[in-house]
Length: 374
Image 1: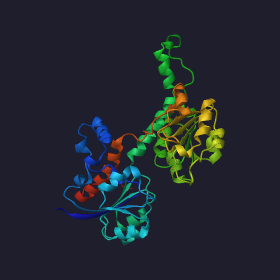
Image 2: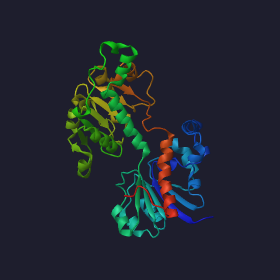
Image 3: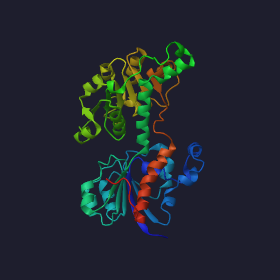
Image 4: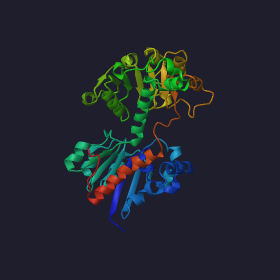
């Protein structure tokens, strides 16, 4: 047995470990999806023990969720001996005292936990938005902090841009135009395609998905307005964006994209009033959660021709086959784009997200450069 190390994980969702479970724990449909994209998937999607081969691993996974997440039942079984369901931050802090590595995901750790830690070699956060990590306390102790990007989020940002370009450049209508050979009388002339710098992008929320969306807009020269619960002046210059009020965001955006989390406070946050403030013909994008929006009011705005929509999420999922949005989608070209909550990509995003952070642990153990340092 190799070097014994203690790793404390504080992750109330499970993404840090989801992609490094044993191959046999994946559902058959997930195995098929992984193999379809890479026939060598079983040798690439390695379990945690194989990624840290030769290490005597003492793993503690703290989960502070209100209730266990039912779809992750097998994941909990995979790490049953390591998993602790607790909301006691003091318990987490006590475990960190003699830990060699600390892995966090969307949790806020008090600086005192770092100040008391005796053995920490690396603090690893899953996601580049590492606001819950006491970075200054770590630097004072000489403990490196890394924040690996969430591929899951990057694929959603890519999908947002696929929606925007599909709508702005009228690709579905152009496909029909070409398929019907209608181009002969109007070669190279097609009305209604947009020049992106003439359009304003509005972002509701400025988290880890919205930021790469904003980078692309900046590259295109597209003005960006944003609303966030807390203003982020340190990002405004870097991302070339302007903070605006709630109503102004809806009233000034030619494209409005939702990028906020669903909580009891945000459920239904976009209602008929907000939808009514939007410019006629604007595009409403939602890749966050369907229950953020009054779907009936949004459907009515689409049915009357006031708005275009691109939606990956819905109030009820899977979307019922008789939902009026589907009837609108079937004949609306680029005005209505619906996808089945797959903007996150594929199961490979789970593997990539989990693997990169554990590879950083392996790099640290081997004395190799750690990636994604902050």
